[in-house]
Amino acid sequence: MRAYLAALRITGLAGCVIGAAVGWLPWQPVWPTFSIHGGLRGAAIGWLAGVVLALLVGRLRPAPPRAQPRLRRAARCVITALALAPALLWFTLAPPGGPLRQAMEWGRTSQDQRPNLILITIEATRPDHLGAYGTTQGLTPNLDAFAREATRYDSAYVSSSWTLPSLAALFTGLLPSSCVIDGPHGAEHIGEVAYRLRPRVPLLSEQFSRAGYATAAELTNHLLSRDRGWNRGFEFFRNESSIEDYSTDLAAGGNVTKRASEWLRRNRHEPFFLWIHYFDPHVPYDSPDTPAALLARYPKGWTAHRKQWVDTMRHASPDKRKQYQQFCREMYAEEVRYADKCVGQLLAQLKSAGLYDRSLIAITADHGEELFDRGDEMEHGHTMRRSVVWVPLLVKWPRGIDADRRVRQTVGMADLHGTLLKSAKVIADDADMRALPRRDGAKGQDVFSEWIYYGKQQTALTTDDYRVIYHPEAGAGQPRFEVYDRRHDPAEKHDLAGAEIAMDLRDRLQQMTEIALKRRAASAGEGGPAPAMSEKEKRDLKSLGYVQ
Image (cartoon, rainbow, N blue to C red; front, top):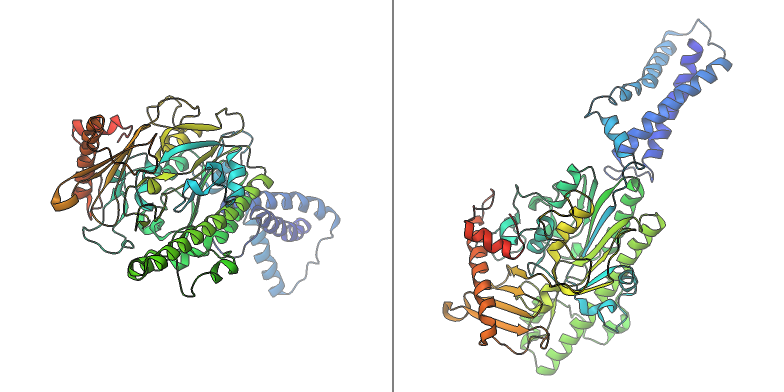
């Protein structure tokens, strides 16, 4: 027996340590960059292998002499106890909630053939800067190559003109006013934590976690923080952005890709939901890859930021204003190029890990961006113009799912909510929940957009044929509408608000806006659920495909 114990001190401990290290590959010394489940699994199996090896080694190793110093005997007892301690792990295999049972269940890949789900959202990205959508600038070779293997949605529109409510609609399938708690009215700083997710509205991440998916988020935007509720349902969640300083977000694109790739290497053996959010190309436009020759063409000290435009350049001479606007457009294009490089590196990692084909990968944006398309309009969150609410949407389906390469009809970016849930079999394919079409040619969805951040509120309704913008408090408190023919006036230069054909759309948008504003006002500063809806409000919401 002493010979077996002597061997166990070496093989048992060594097997446990080696097994844990293999389970944590690639090994990282700082919490929480390794996988607890992989480590537990590896430690238990490695220790068991060490016990078996001890039985063989013990036969060959002579027993130690009987007479030993007391201190040495005590040390051997301690080491023997440590070598036997991992046996306790195996006692947690039987209970349903036992750590080792959970670790073993997470490692079962042969029985779980559900697709991996990868959601990539990119800040402030305009479709007209992607080659897949027709531009010839050559900014996005990686996204263009991805689009050739995916379904490209030509007319995808978001539910809001800024990050938090837009992505909240995606993660809940609800209108922003039904899933976001409004900040205090008159607040001047977007960093206030008052704007956050409603705590009792289920998120995609929570639904996937309950369904047995590993869930992770690698983000960079202070509006997507733990304080605002975005970590709910994620087993791994990282967002190191500063609430007060945009500059901490800027250079994070490469870091986000690197860290997401590390998580993928550790968790590729189990079905997972991974959300990656890139801050580029958000203002200030300052890509780390901006060519020196481009910067040399413009005055030193210029920054591509709305603050410089509003405080200085908007009041400059016409020639200088025009030069600054071109500077912003070129700097924005470089940000798009940098974001494409980061996404391309991530897609390459997915392919090298063998994850690409069996994953549903969706790439989209939280909103678009205004680049002086209409006078002084820059950035986002100020209007409901097409340039802000129209976004790229590319979906590569898992192997075996057939879909058209191009879908022209109108869809809402929030329809990704139902698409992901149905793809993961969390809900049935025929469930009453809106999802993206996989075929071109059907009638499109009508998309309601609400909640600008700066200035008086605006809402919008986008159909296959028209876009209607509603200003509830325009000019002396009187409402105003804008109506544009999408087929013949995509740049939205000819207002048809007075045309008879627009009357029904105007009435419908006004009703939806009244519901949304009432719910927002009731939620300002609160932490509870959304206020109850009347039956009429439910019918109106359902008419647009949103179900509470």
